[in-house]
Length: 365
Image (cartoon, rainbow, N blue to C red; front, side, top):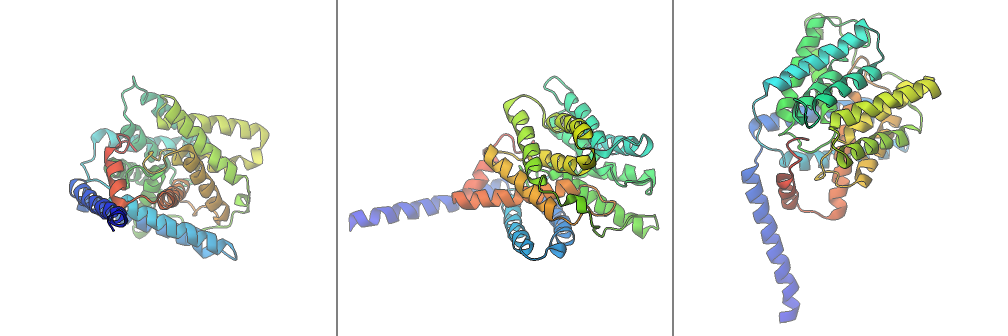
């Protein structure tokens, strides 16, 4: 009897320790009200994107894939939200760089007719160089500027006035400065998710004030029906992850520099596919911002890139005139993949909270 009871006693002790760790971690890192509100706003924007861009357009076997990824993403969101941290006040440098990123992106694309992907790469390289170990920017500041870049691509044509670009840039800087270290810590591609949220708010406000704003209904883009999106999305994630984790290169530079190289190669070799495959690569790079407590190895980062490519393959096309679609889709892929990794390894919520709390990379991701 004694031998038979030992495993049970050990299990009961483990369960008690897990519950104790969960309670202790929750008391210490309990999300604030602002954290929960911002998390709810991100969830609402992601659900809007998923329903309009994927679920409403899924047919046949695609419905199963979209439903499975959606359920996993919701689980990943719940796991990430309960491990979120108390919010902080926005930093002036983050807000300033968010504004500068948005204005710079809009100026390059609207006034100089620079291709969108090239503009992202150019500004990303500038921010990344400034975020080098000897540079004046830290990760949060450069990421806020990069968020502003995606937010500044408000319209493919000069429809919205410049005042809305300024508002969008300021809002992007403020939101990422608060969300970055607190909401969904360690989840990849949050920069794009914030850009999508800001774009949705700006378009809604512009429409209510009578400004000529674009429709937010999805449009057909047959060019996205390209199976190359899967390996390209995976390659973008893995290359950026390798540069970030195997060298001292800052994330924004590791994202922007290869994007410029890919655009150059595709401009010569596959000019007709540069926009589509370049978008797949760009969104894949944002996935690499995931912290190890979410996607612990290159395998999981690459798998998230494949899921992202598969989502874009089934996507009916980017929302008309919208921004942040690529990054928001990458966030969904990261959440789903992180949930799958958590389920397969049988980790407990208390251990996940402890791992997030102990990770030095979490506030920066």
